[in-house]
Length: 632
Ligand SMILES: NC(=O)c1ccc[n+]([C@@H]2O[C@H](COP(=O)([O-])OP(=O)(O)OC[C@H]3O[C@@H](n4cnc5c(N)ncnc54)[C@H](OP(=O)(O)O)[C@@H]3O)[C@@H](O)[C@H]2O)c1
Image (cartoon, rainbow, N blue to C red):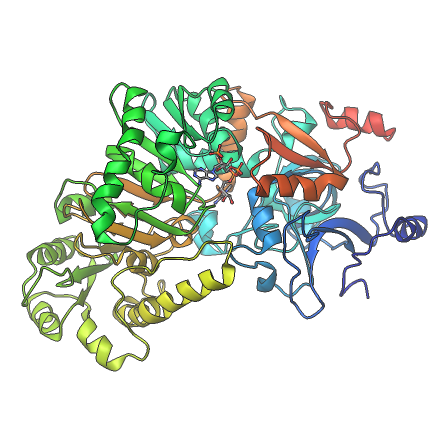
């Protein structure tokens, strides 16, 4: 039955038959909202399964994994709208969903197909009662679509809608925008800026919106300061360059050729660095695990730092925008100046984010203040665990415990030994302690690992999942349960600490970033971190928007944007504060090719949108579209 299994062998004959019976529209058919009947079935670009939930992942075009399918049209819920998609955005997360790398989001739902596509431009075809009563959106409106879905009725939405069961439609859900008719929540729908033609209007929310939040909220950039951007001539990197010029920043882009560098300059960058230049190419790699190699690795980065300084009046970067992952992250962090902040929202080349610590130290009080530690905040302190601490006393951790208690925080402590735990409990009014000595004896499966193991490449998803699963099983789960027993409250049933006080003399950052609260949980350091390697698992920091505060630098995860940030961004576009990139309107039939080009890093500058039903690439309004279609 078509309801259960999508029809993937879409022959012209089958299409014709369904069109003749009124059950399907051509993908580019004119559509008059309220007049044209909504068909029973629709065309979509999807990955499909074998009927038992096993996805047929692979490269979009090379392996034929992305197929044109015929699937049912869904009904909107009370606060939803059914949209007739005119265009749909092409984004990198489509490629992740199609290939199943590094995780199969197909396996996270129970449909036997997964339509990718996050955002686009649409006409409202039908509307739920609740949305209709609000009178903001009506049938016939031209809207563009933000791909973020959330539970608008959750009290957590009051803090930031992204904290209320947030998902990206088309990546984490199987009903993305590369289909003719898509159901969207009312909160996803916006009136496009008036100064954009229809091709551009549905092209930019996912990438530019991510950059809007990253630059102007997460990094909170100071106008006039130095910015370093990875992948500065395509996608999000390109958007970062263009949007940062509006704040008069001095922008240096990382690229892989002079041609791409020139494009970055045309877009407003002040300089570029070609990572494929012979003098740099060997240096562009992750900090190795072996301590013997750390000095050489740091020294090998000097030509990169030198080139950056030459192009920036002798200074390093105040801010970094990163997304290229393990192969790039270590050097991008090395480029950060004292007082600098790095943000990242993806990790294309690998999820093991490693960096060498920088020199400088501060006090627990100063770093708790930067992290905005509040009375009542669940707080976790590592005590006695760095290798150079013997006996019961750990003066740095004691200062951290004392200071957190003075802030009226609720403090739990991880200790190395039972003796240290007894000492801490006898001396300080803490919620309790977790002794690693006791965990070793009593907790099934616990094993103290002194760093995140080296993570396999994302192209080996099974090996990656096994390695990270083993780390979580040995470290995160037993420690998480033990800490939760000390810190859980009705509002925080998992007992996630808001703030974790980490130690320079160990590499448990991967565990601390997993333990601290999703959405702005913070890991803080006060000691001198130079000469030591640190590493963490990327998605735990970017997707959950966690933050790492160090004595002289900061690393902040960032992800997508919220509905209000879309409104703010649209206003800036309408006021010509920044522009929308050139848009490649791609024929419907070439959807798999567009994804394949992106996967192979062969795509052009600018954004790609799939053309569902625009008869022309320079239409200025819905009225012009209807004229071209010959409808009222
Ligand atoms: N969390 C979110 O909300 C969010 C939103 C949008 C995108 N993302 C993620 O962000 C990432 C980038 O997306 P995008 O749309 O910007 O993709 P994109 O247009 O393909 O850009 C990625 C760029 O990274 C650069 N790159 C590739 N390998 C590199 C390496 N080893 N070292 C340094 N740079 C390298 C390439 O530029 P050069 O070859 O010129 O250096 C490439 O053009 C993806 O992983 C995507 O899923 C996340």
